[in-house]
Image 1 (tube, rainbow, N blue to C red):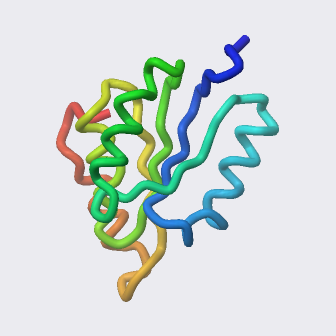
Image 2 (image 1 turned 45 degrees about the vertical axis):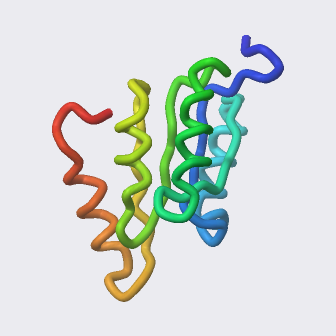
Amino acid sequence: MTAPNEILVSVIMGSSSDADTMAAARRALRDLGISHEAKVLSAHRTPAALLEYIAGLEDRGCKMVIAAAGMAAHLAGVIAGHTNMPVLGVPLAAGQLQGIDALLATVQMPGGVP
């Protein structure tokens, strides 16, 4: 059982335009009874706010992060570089390459990165 303010999964999106795409993931977490929250924080536009949020996750009981971003898709890598918890990177279709760049940025993170 989780404490009232404890979240098990944090869903972080790089842009508010990603919310519709990630709605299915949030619905699945809710249907499975997994406590979660969603935030829009960008590795490029709001880096200080992102790092501040990441720093507090473990204290709130968070066990993993789902990071969704398109185009350069640095979000999952930045988060993984600042925590030891698992980070699931979700490359989103955006821009002229329709997500190919996001896919490559996500799957080519260095070895040992969560």
